[in-house]
Length: 383
Ligand code: GLT
Ligand code: MN
Ligand code: MN
Image (tube, rainbow, N blue to C red):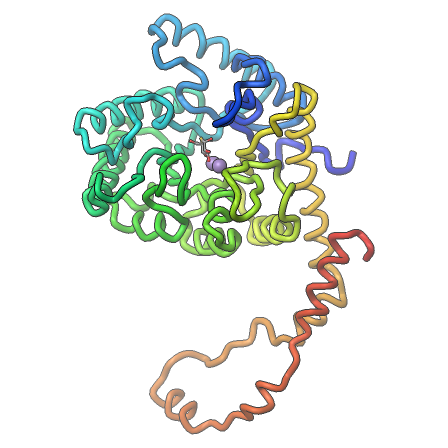
């Protein structure tokens, strides 16, 4: 059937997404907590390919080792029974009060050491379940007041932690790559490594930059008022797009984590078009949750909606790329032609004396209005 997800689409969800009970800062949970096995079954039912988790989504923080074993046994049995895979895992370094002032960047060396211990154990758990990507979302790595923490010291601590953990992964021989997930704020007043650009620059300063990429999230760059696609493109070009968190967000609002495509259809379209055009082959992870108004049926509608919208937009991208009028307009814009054929002293001298019809260049209409309207009409289904 059209727009039905298949494993080849590589659609994944975190346990915390379809398992989100609808708690918010002003209200109690509205949905019952479901155990990981039930969530795996739910994801299989709606047609997802993968399931991701934080250590404590799967194994409670105070579980005994016998409990851990039983939980992992039941979970991996559910994976085998449903065919779901675990592409990515991560650590919860934000819920426990011990991390109220950060984990890797905490001022307290005991908290930093505990964060490393917790992450090594969580990496072991993730690898045991098959994860090949390990996400670092530093939700508590930040401040409300810059009086409390020196930003240079914080960066140094963050770097030390990631260097330590890269060395751990290499020492264990794990086939694991790291992906840093930027976010500008919430739950901290300001979070370090606020955007994709911050993270990319930071990665270059690590001991093993080749092991570390980014996990950009639609909502997070959008919260910062940025163009998400541009951040993704830069990550892709740098060979750093290891993972992606798809959802939606209205600029200037609280952290909404809406169903993919729910708020900014045109931006979602150009994002899907980009990922498909360049041949991004990693997981398409929906890091979002159902509205707080929903019951279990609404959670399934939410999950199905994320995947269906992606597939509809993928079809629209194919249509856009094949549209003769759109392609003719693009051709008129001299796409693909070079401004110069590269530097040589002779080419530089020739260019310095070349004459340009500046007035004609400035007078030319570029037909972007028409091009954008055609895009809108593709999206609205009238072309
Ligand atoms: C949390 C956050 C997400 C991160 C998750 C991974 S947890 O829900 O809002 O953006 O991707 O730690
Ligand atoms: Mn988010
Ligand atoms: Mn995320």
